[in-house]
Amino acid sequence: MTVNKNYSLVLQKVNHLSFEDRPKPEIVNETDVIVQILATGICGSDVHFYARGHIGDFVVKKPLILGHESAGIVTKVGSEVTKVMVGDKVCLEPGTPCHVCRMCLGGQYNHCAKMHFAAAPPVDGTLTKYFKIAETFCYKLPDNVSVDEGALMEPLSVAVHAVREAKITPGSSVVVFGAGPVGLLVAAVARNAYGASLTVIVDINEERLKFAKNYFGMETYLSIKGRTAKEAGDNLVDMFDLNSERGFEFAMDATGVPYCIQSALYSLRPRGIFVQIGMGADNAELPISTICFHELNVKGSFRYNGGDFEQAVGLVARGVVDVKKLISSKFKFSQAKDAFEFVRQGKGLKTLISGPE
Image 1 (spheres, rainbow, N blue to C red):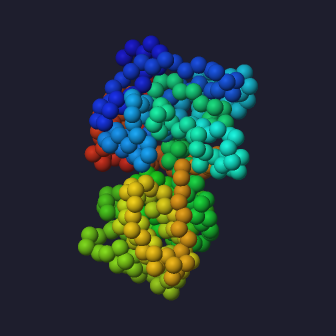
Image 2 (image 1 turned 30 degrees about the vertical axis):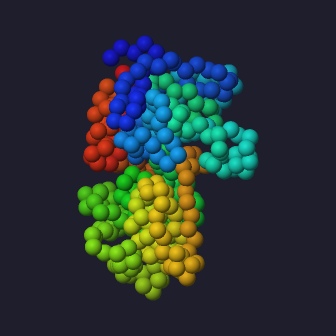
Image 3 (image 1 turned 60 degrees about the vertical axis):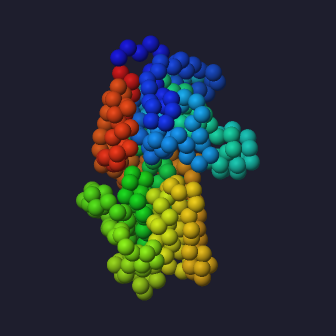
């Protein structure tokens, strides 16, 4: 494969990916950093855009470079960059806010209305050879953290943010719906970093639950067809002997599936905390009487915010969370189209694509 400038994987339209040689990015602001991308994880949102062309209000209207879970090597920096230098291994926080709106100034830049987020139409993503990013959102990886692990810092930061939003405390009980990468990472962060004493993963996929138990040491619960959401929530409480507690203290949903959301709410004790992470159905029916009678705290969690990436890097560097276990497949850049089909078919857990040769 001959690369003249900036070989990239481009979504032309639904189900149609192609390789293009895009212009190589250049330093514009003196705080810019140019990174050669060496590893990118395929996210569920990438597959949604590939298969459907939209997620909520984000619609692919023109060719779009996919990818936002990336790490690589710094190749060029602006004159005012002090945080990283050429040759450093880095991971990327793939969104750039405006820094001046009320949300940004108030510390909630993940809600910036002018956010430019990689692979969120119309902003191009990171499945490219070279990517430009502001120094602020470029994090140096310690020597004991690989580039492949660096590509997992983005989903790990999603998990860190969700757990911080929940305000999980040592000794607490937590149930997480969804044994995909984000759900597993949420459970790992809740237990290993925040001290939850009981952490349960719920899924319909027996193989993923075996993985959660064998490689992460999690308690697991197989969701069985035929039960109502209320029955599933009650059975969860019974199985883990939480009747005297009247349920879990925290429930987190990483699926976006209405049935899972409902089951999670039914599994909570009075004044329990529910955090929605996964984005599936745009709308879901909720057990309003249960939310009111039990005074449940229902929250959303969106991407990440200040400190989340730093904490994620630290957790991996100190061995608190092992993200390597999640990497099930790695494709060459020239095989990127095959990688997307592989993930769309539900194979593997976390698939990485190497940077362009």
